[in-house]
Image (cartoon, rainbow, N blue to C red):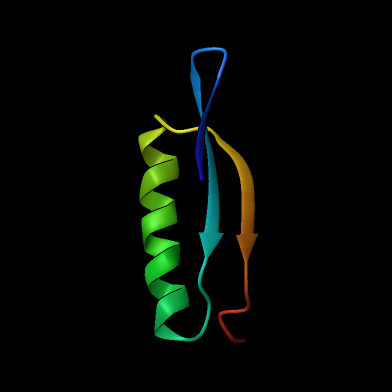
Length: 50
């Protein structure tokens, strides 16, 4: 979901779970957070297993 708020981009994430999907999501999210160029206003996810 994207929407502009006072010139800034608002970004929310919906993360998929389930085994390999969770591992992939973890890697992508880790890279996005490490890059430091995004601010997340919302986050939703499901279980990726044990």
